[in-house]
Amino acid sequence: MKMRLLIICACAILIISCENPMTFRTKVNEDGSLDKTITFEKAEEKVATNNIYGISEKNGWATKVNSLESSTEKAKDKKFRIELNKHFASDQELNKELDNTNDSLFHVHSQFEKKFRWFYTYIRYSETIRPINRFKMVSPRDFFNQEDSLFIQRLPAEGKPISKADSLYLQILNEKINDRFATLAIFKETIILIEAIVRKNTSDKKWLDTLSKNWELVYKLIENDQKVENLIPKVFDTLSIPVDRLKAAKDFDSLSKELTSRTHFMSFARDGKYLNAFEMPWDIVSSNADSLAGRNVYWKPLVNKFALSPYEMYAECRKMNWWAVAISAGIVFTTLILLWKKRT
Image (cartoon, rainbow, N blue to C red):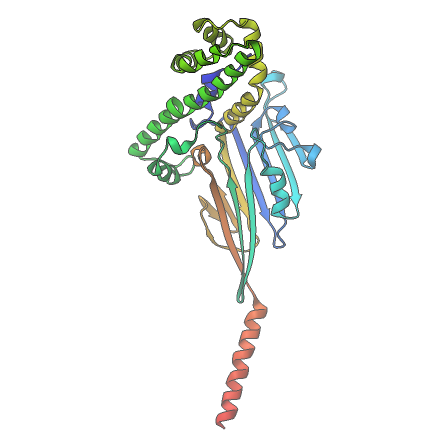
């Protein structure tokens, strides 16, 4: 029973931290195959087998683990650079692993498109990070308007300067998320679990009515107390619900495992500092990247970008179809010859 409701709630979405730096690299090949590398730059050793992507050597990812600390460092405090890489024959294969429906894992959707345009062949590759918000009972649409969305979209890359006005707006937005959205979300999911405990331990429906009529009181208890071991007894004591307090706390601990898993994911993802890179096969003609170097494009998105809505990163490249140029030149040359002969 170590789940801290409001601490997890407040950490679950947007307050930026840099405790979990991660680097993603994708080499995009002409044939549509992809070479994917995910690196945890500073992580616990267990992340090699248990991470927010659900990947490890067990499902075919080659893994390198290098210690970052000296041998004198305590084992529990040691940090490691963990690199995982795997080759995929197509974007569909990649999506099977990184764009699943598990609410406790990071979701990234990849898309490869190849188009023939006579003189040029184009490749467009994109990766869309799904929102890390995993609360199920409250919709962000009820709290955030178009102005909030447009503000998030124009936020600069990690480390870039931000104006004082935007800094103030970001602070207000974070307070809205943590003080209103996240608190209400955790309350609604928690009250469902408390109702389940009441049903499990008493057959008298009046106690469910009591819980429903006093939802504001329960909300304040959740808002003011961060520990489940304190919260559950307080709720039942305050409302005089005849259920054994220790039994209720144990039931809550059991029933809240799925919620705990989701909030732990949100907390880890929230603490991320992200670098994403594509290596394209040809010269790049368009992209929404933060920076570009030759055939490589880079993004350093703030967590805000994909906290509540999807965030797409794309790059498009092209190559000249010299055979098409040759055919076209041949057609033009032949046409000119025929016209000349006709005139003579």
